[in-house]
Image (tube, rainbow, N blue to C red; front, top):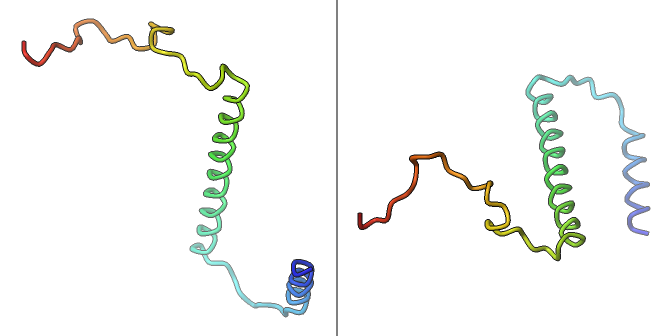
Length: 87
């Protein structure tokens, strides 16, 4: 009920407002654009987070592949081997 009362008062406030005789300067427009881009980025990252969480439910019980399962993934170029600290 509070939501409906708030919505009715908001709509009546907006409907009763007169002309503002104002303009949007470039700073205001860039602020709106920045807010829209930030909202879209937040939505994209939230969707990605929940998508992978949901996908892990239907995957292999959330288990990740070990490095031994995919030996070609962590290859280093020749001549770039690490040596033990004592040598």
